[in-house]
Amino acid sequence: MGLELKQSLKVSQQLAMTPQLQQAIKMLQLSRVELEEVIREELEKNPALEEQEEDAAPSTEEMAPGQASLEEDMRETPSEPEPADTAEVHAEDSAPDIDWEKFLENSQTGHTAPSNRESRESDLPPLEATLTQGDSLFEHLMGQLGELRLDEAERRACELIVGNLDDDGYLRFEGLDGDPVIHVAAEAGLTLTRAESLLRRVQRLDPVGIAARDLRECLMVQAEARGVADCLVGQLIRDWLPLLPQKRQPFIAKRLGVSLKALDFALRELAEFEPKPGRRFTGEPPRYITPDVYIHKVGDDYMVSLNDDGLSRLRISAFYRNALRSGEALGKDKAFIQERLRSAAWLVRAIHQRQRTIVKVTESIVKYQRAFLDRGLGHLKPLILRDVAEDIGMHESTVSRATAAKYVHTPQGVYELKFFFNPAIAKSGGDEIANEAVRTHIRRIIAAENPRKPYSDQQIVEVLQSEGIDIARRTVSKYRELMRIPTSARRKKFV
Picture: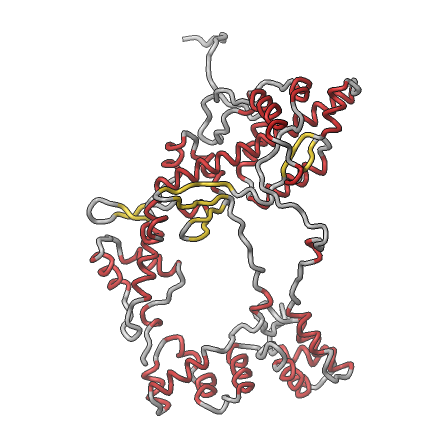
């Protein structure tokens, strides 16, 4: 059989990734902070966009014609079937070009992005003037060194010590072996005894125990500062530190000749020590979450509402509107104004599409997770992206983008939207339960256990089975480790 070339026609559907469609997808997956940044950047580079203040809102009569015209010009067209890896955005890219002269002829105000922006107070200081940043560990210690009476060599040695602390506050010379004090003495030109004396002075600065060479030295410095170095606490640090995590209290108490009650008292005091003195200087600053959407209970129903506080109200610039309407802009100037107006309108539309999609996804989640909203974490239902996607008629990738880095305020607290998507774990009786709900049950069981006889993983399995939750022991062990809950041997208390 011979080979030949021939032409044929084939009809197929595909979705073209136009710039407008790419912008809509980008807006959908932005977090709230990122969206605010994009709006600020557009306000800076697009002269056709203006930020409208809350108190400058026009009357309903003035707003209506412009809004109606914009909705007519920007109404959605039927979307084409999309591939599995493309987000459904209702094919905004296929909308016809806008007749800007006609639109601006009817519009008095332009279109605004949804927002409830609070009016500014002129007497308030700028935001940057209210921000503060804590000192680093190095700055904190150098400030204290400045108050000590030290000669030049001693100051040089102390600076070497402070400058070679790791994130936990321990003295480490990167790439060098041996006792760090030897390197300090050699670099500063001091004797080893003098360098050791300076190290002890640094270790008693705030936080106490800083610049220790190991955990035992760190804890012992704190014990000396508390005046318990010669007591049972000091003896535990010096001689029994490796056995303490193993919960061998009866053996230790017998060897020391003390009662379990006295040993437990000493261990409680030791637990108040800080094994990582530099920890509070290296922790990440707290993140303040602003919910993107709220879920409120009204009677027996739950209502979903957007949180638009802080989002800028956008409108078309009156200056460019008048320039285009009066016919003063010609040639390149007119083309520039039209291009800027088109860009501004697509931005506003992409923001509206993003907000509508988030609301639709949240309303679908409310339908599936009503038991959680009513009774809490223990009643969280299994849910996957496909369930919500089929419910709202969108693609799974759209739901994934709409829930990424978005937060919701619920009667049970603030959660990321992705939190509500959990795989199912089989439950006796034919029902299913989400893995996050199982973790909640495990935490509850451990919190209610007898500290002297904590539950093993197998016993937790048996308790769960008695409650109708069928789960394997290895699954309980995995969830316990993910929640950073120690084993039953380490949870056991002897007094």
